[in-house]
Length: 283
Image (cartoon, rainbow, N blue to C red):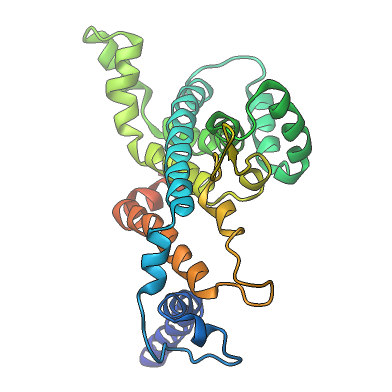
């Protein structure tokens, strides 16, 4: 019975792995196919004549390069600011007793559940009025707004697990409240901080609705990508006619954009798991 159960587990594991990785393998295979092969009615799963022309075309595309820089810059700044604000807010919620604490948490949860598409119209008008349309701050601010609630909830769970006596001991040794927070509490909550940072970065890196709605191709009177990020820029990849999209280039761009996410997950997978499972087991 144990042997059959073990075989069943491995069979289920392999089926789930194939189901999850099959689209990824297909995109990678598609990125090595030429235009003639992707335009065929029933293309083969593996490329018949592999080529790296798609990668050279994408890497030499100035619009894609600029949008890639926009994505890195906007995601990095939004992540840094969101983690700083979330760390301070989560510490106050976990450690301090004040009126309206539950209301703050409820509002944060409500903001996280609010649909992004409902704010596109008002933000579009507001940003054009105040001059934030097609700028990095015009995307950083809403990205922070939608990622702060999740970051606050994640970090609050970590701060609650840290013994209050450790902070008091640091203060007895002569540390100020800020020094105890910065040198004792934050390092102990490092898994939660990493988790909040990675989740925020993922949201800013993959977000599409705000990126396509709050940016344009005009930047200071010159044509280009403006502040448009990669997910929005990919929607403007068109072929010679509407009936022949550049499937190979789209797949190639998707592979290039996914590489940083894979690297981040592989480097910080233990911290991600520790942050997401914090508080799940008591005692």
